[in-house]
Length: 148
Image (cartoon, rainbow, N blue to C red; front, side):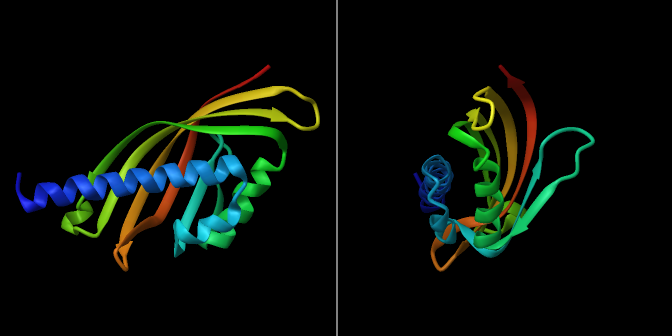
């Protein structure tokens, strides 16, 4: 195995650790940790359904405020990483990558006690800066929602 293949294995593993760190921070409500996960100029968009406007935020603090606002409606929230297809060397640049990431969410609305289950896909961009991979951008598109 050559040096480039070893670097690819390490880079994909580090990006998957970044994804796990994000899901873990969301599940614990550890919004301050977003500063370690997102680049200062990272833009995150959330599309909750066809025909609905996208919500957007920029930078770790903006993203944390947006996501914590969504999470604040629930007294129970668990996000699960279901699959990730990581593409390294985005545009031929060894310090850029992208991925399509599928997640599931399991929540209970605080106001009504009803359960909400959903699934969706993140379309991610990552950049390596200072030797660390971080989110450069995310676009979440919800593909399924069910309330009980």
